[in-house]
Image (cartoon, each protein chain N blue to C red):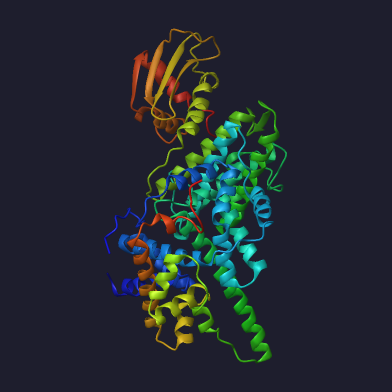
Length: 208
Length: 334
């Protein structure tokens, strides 16, 4: 693996001209720029929200919220700190996880009242969930099982590292380090090849 | 790295996956502000997390786009070809983004004009809502005082102990009202704000000017780098402050009728103006030529830099140059 040149805030890839121009157009209030971002990233944002929440209606709400947020505060996207896709992914994932945790809290209260036992998610089902982006799929596949499971429980299952530890029956410190080591490996795999193909968009080529 | 920092550092992976408790998230966010290597690693980990997320891409139902666009329009108006409205939209967007980055514990920091950061944010909402009321679209109907200081005090009394988002919501609603009104108002339509009749265009530029000025007040209070507007925006602000000089000099009773100044503002967004020093004709042969940098000129105009502290080159009568500079601020911002 080669050492990457990084910007001051740790970005691996130089911001694309498209990202900078699009940000400026959004700030200027150009609606077409929002439509372009939507065209490029709506499948990414919606797919991620849907995977985490598992409910189409709620995933639509989260997606709408993300793109409206992009429109309302475009300057909050800082190209030097990371790609547009990473920013959108962060916005979408946070909202999706918040939704799941709110629902869980609600369900727990309901379950408590009905005094039924809590359920744990099907870890195996998550581990075999289909992944579609080639390189990341390959990278995920080369992760040790324990790291992959931890990441999938946390990222797609909306679990905190404490809950991950509980589900997997491991100490919290171990859960923390598995999450970090696993993510680092994915990051390394992304560094190893030309980053632009996979880093800039949720799907397809990004030139437009 | 302290023991505490080591504990926080171990959370980076979980944090990048949003798999931490809110209190832990706050600790990580505080940590990465002062640990560049951690910020760098977090950027990589977040990027990896998003790449994992992208493996689940799935097209949303086609009608979602329309719903996104109509929701977006209610939050922030779309651009028109009108350059004056663009100036206003640009500066309000930058200010809004700045507020997103103000930490809660910075709200009590004092700014140069004696208000805390929180109070200054409230002050600007008070001003914007006064403009909204002036165009017949009140956003705070029960707050009717138009006097700037009294209005600010009343707003501070109402919003100081409240979460910041409340006053931001009022500010945003007021901005949207002015933007929507401006999209439909005819060119030159007057707005009576704070006792002065502003043409629609000057009002937009003046509001943008004040917004930028207070954004920089906040940056200064937080020890951040000041951030001038884009050149086109800066040019409109400079133009407003130069073209209001004759009226300002008359108001200050320092007019030099019959005299003309040439103002040369350098740097991106600058320009070159001939301006009469009172209500009189413009002469093609100026009595004084003042050359200075456009951002500095605008800071004098917004009373953030003393006229005497502005580096400039003067050809001709220096007394005329001094009066010109002192008059630049009277109408540019309120």
